[in-house]
Image (cartoon, rainbow, N blue to C red; front, top):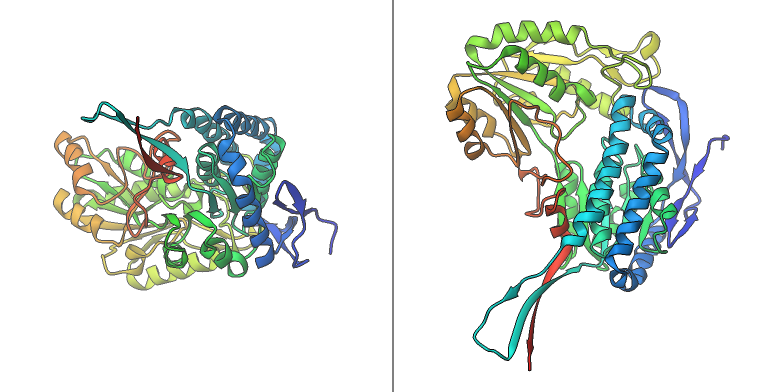
Length: 484
């Protein structure tokens, strides 16, 4: 092995190597010569040890005063912000996003920890009036037990934070497995909770392939809750594998539309397309993948969009002035290039889509943002989640046609409308089949204190993430009758 740092698992309050004695590499998608370190290729035995540690710690943790749990979350947030520059640089090097976006993600994660440190202390039950003067009836909220958190590579600390924080503040214990394509910043979150004084076993961190440990951390009956963000196919497999008594929260794919009506401001529409479809290299589940635009506006919109996209600087996220970074993995690059080729066969290729592989791009996974027009509903680029900087432009004949086409998808995560017509603004939230609905805003982004989740195949759970709603998934209601 080379001299790169070896990062360990965190089980039962200890940093430990995998029982497999095997590791895997973590490399920079902007520069494959940049090796960030080696991570544990965990075994089933490692997963069992992590679950057992969490199970053993649960009774004491649920009995820990909530003010003490809150203190640990706040101290972990402090640790993230004290090291924000180092951690942001590491996040950019392992995932590829712009350094400014990485700083924002670290700060957002700290904000999430602090939000739940406060909001978790407001959980209350209810008392119920009844006819028996000798009886009192009330409800209390209780933790579920061991919770498994499985997260993707595109937001590798903010998504874990919005799952782990509500789990811990409500008295659950956690086993956290990050994506193998971006494990370092997940390690830093584990480091933050360790530094904050989380008791042994309350929080556990293991890395490795889902094929090796996925079944153990999802099907083990000791696990009482699974919170997963990733592809719809993977979410469906986890949901089916979970024990009957295990609660599941699956946040999955999207094929998010931006609808541009005839009265829309075209500069606004172009700006929202670029922000939603091309920022973060299109690697956001809420990213703008389809633009449904009034037929009369299409040609002028495309001209302005191409002009804007031509000015975007593609490069290493660590380089000042970069606006679009690399795709996160070679597998993702190959997938996106495949969709671009499919688009060229089916639709009108307007701009971009080149695999950039020369000069400064030679060691990374770069692709130029792609724009397709004359896209119809049956085309792959109109129906499947691409998860890259590819926008499909679809013509519409008015609001009603837009709604029909926007809803003609198995997904229902995010949707946005560009208009100044108050009648359509009022109707849109009722007509669109999406869990997040926006008007004159980009499809991407959500508040820490607001619920987040999808409809249809974008989610398998009625429980929302984020905001106060994020506490509901990790608690159960008990009804108590007391007589005298």
